[in-house]
Amino acid sequence: MHNLQVKRHYTALKGFYLFAFLGTGSIIPLLSMYLTKEQHVSGSQVGLIMSLGPIVMIFFQPFWGMLSDYTQKTKSLLAVCTSVTGVIGLGYILFESFPLFILVAACFAAFQSAIIPLSDSISLRYTQQTNGNYGGIRLFGSLGFGIAVFVMGQVTNQLYPIHVIFIFGCAFLCMAAILASQMPGQQKTKTKINIRKGFRELISNKPFLIFMIVTFTSFAPNLANNTYFSLFLDKSGASLSAIGLLFFIGVISEIPFMRFAQKFIDKMGLLTVIMLSGGVSLFRWMLYFTEPSLWIIYATVCLQGVSIGLFIPAALQYVKKITPSHVEATALTMYAAIGNGFGNWFCTFVGGYIFDYVSIFAVYLLFAILSIAGAGLTLYLIKAEKNKHSLHQTAVTFKP
Image (cartoon, rainbow, N blue to C red; front, side, top):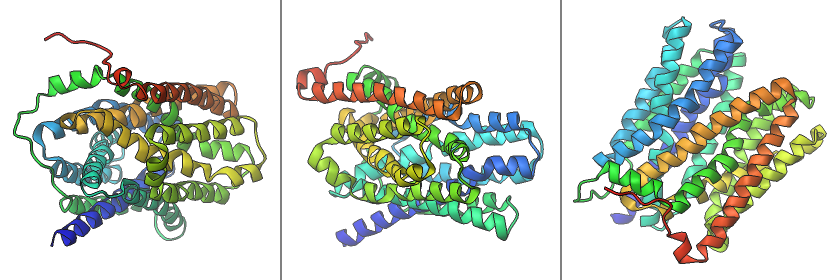
């Protein structure tokens, strides 16, 4: 009976990632096209709408984490936020004015920001309890996103008007919410959670603070690359169909690395795997800065699998390892806020100016410089980990 229950929980976890990323993958990649083609929103207005997501995440992701730690009802909170995200997305169909699109974008981002960190918190906790493989679960997210980008592009190009992305997205996210309710629950602690004290613990945790900077410098450029990669490919001479195919290959290449990430981690260690993924990212950005031939880009697009497919499982496990269990969700949402939120916004924002005033290739020099800084800090953490006293030394002492 126990084995059957574990199997059901793993099925729910995998299904959640698949449908949640099918939902967001249906909406987000084609949102800017919908706004310009069907709603005739200007380019600057589209830029403002698209930039809201990372900014909102900076504030809301830690909020969801602290609320989860306080209520200890992570899966219920996840189910509500996932379904509400899908319903809010329908607002893009219902409304037709720019101010209302701003409102929809802000609300969509606020609830969407809870999906990944809360589901990661549940998955990490359960895989450690059952000696499972987190990467083997998380890869279904990459699979769902890759399928959504490819299929929705074909569907909206040949069969249906582009606004169906919101209908499909809502349906997928509601399905994910149902699966969230079937996820394993968490063991409630008898002691009352002190949110202020927990937050103080995190910001006085030296390895945690340093790793937040590593996330900002090493992982955020990979997210910002989603914004500039199509422009880079276009400038390199790729056709529209080739751009779509390369995006699909890049996302799908993450799957095998996520599947076997735990083997790398067990053999090399968390920080060494993070260093490896950061080094591959650095190589990729430097290569793109040199304005390579199109065939070289084709040959190296799978490096995204190493950069993201190894980093995500290793980084999440490292955050869980260095933070107390009673503030786990808060720590994971802060990690997401730095990488998915502030870091993504910074790289996208600064990259936009570099693109306007220099070139698209120079954007990747920015990414490379950040990656060098991230590699240096990761190396510091590797050395510090060898000295247990240095590893656990706190950065700041707070007085009550």
